Image 1 (cartoon, rainbow, N blue to C red):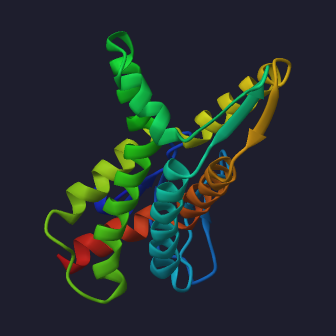
Image 2: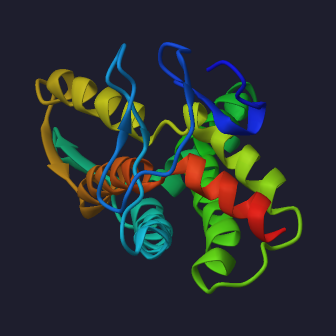
Length: 207
């Protein structure tokens, strides 16, 4: 580390260990020696993979909020609802407006905004062009929003609730439930495929 400038230093996001940043060969990885977290992992067509997964996230999110999520029938009554209908139903009750806003933000809006920002930042890089205006700010915002994207927490909560609901009636899992599960998997793959250090360097180099 001695004699290295700040531009040549990379910090492990897991344990804060500092390393001299260097671009490994394609297919190779720079891994933290302390916690084994992957720091830099350049891959062939990485930009294309990330953009494709971000677009997939947007399409899945559209279907996940529109199609029926769950249905329940008990004592001769049957009801099916989607995530969008649930959020709108909360808005009809004054004391649950804040809850509806949080639900919409954490499981719908934030994942969608993150995907849009990722596409905005990476698409010009993929095409070999100069970064879009305010690309670095957009990418920083997308990274800041990452801990607040809680679609996977929503699915886990629904799975726990289903265990209790089945005791009161027949539960039908709608297509939106499975779309959310696929959405979570795609989001994880997108985060794994994204080499953030390489993106930052590309934004600095092409600006």
